Length: 385
Image 1 (cartoon, rainbow, N blue to C red):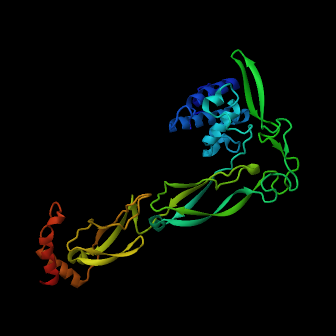
Image 2 (image 1 turned 45 degrees about the vertical axis):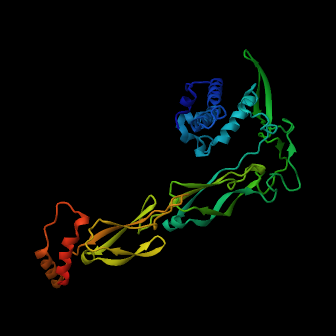
């Protein structure tokens, strides 16, 4: 990501007010509700919000100034790829939701419930190795996933069983503090999460001893995943609402399954086609043959035409990989490799010498369509016909 100061268009000596003013301007400019359907605007909105969230916090800003994004790890900044659009909207509404007209401008007034919103759980990422055979047919897999699940003792509330969280007396359960301020531009209202309850609108006076008021515990769960045929290692599956549960009853995050297609020693995948190298003897190349070859789902017989050249391709239609979400399927390509022995018996050497006496000089350019006459003479030399 670009430098946070450059993203906001401020100097490295900018004070908190300059940073906030710069962010407000850029956030309004790139807000997705003003740029319907624009992925670029959405991405820009997320970037400037992430920059603002770091630079507004003195501790995070100091770490960023000294060490860059590496200095933010473990401090809640930098976000490690977990900063998404909902996070950006939440930050924007947290700091500017009460500014005159901003909620009305984007149609967001009424979308909030008295400022209280349960925090969403984390997105969980897991890697799933797949064989090429899995990719060819599609497969169901059962995964063991480590995530945060609701505490059974307190049922996710964070309060000791038999007790209930109490309404925050500072914000009255609203989860936010509003401050009216006057300036040369008029009167405006700033809204911030309640510092007493952390924006939740309630306070746990008797914490659950099992989960320490968090409302969730780390567990391992079995989750079934259905992988469609035709996927690649660039694809991933997103299971909505199957990640970690949010703190104290918050909604679940997502589960992202990263696919890792393992190499198959028999085949090379080229898009939806499979390439298979088939070594044959000189005699098979001359006289032709029928050979059983492996396929991704079993075996198949392939006819080797007489006079085939090394490097030629044969095609088994429809025995490749299905296209992802498509109706067509690739082919299995068989590349012929003519094996030349390094040692010959006396009898074999005599046959080859006899062949050399009757064979024509090698052409400058091979024409596979005009090979019949030459190979007929070769077969005669072998068979004595």
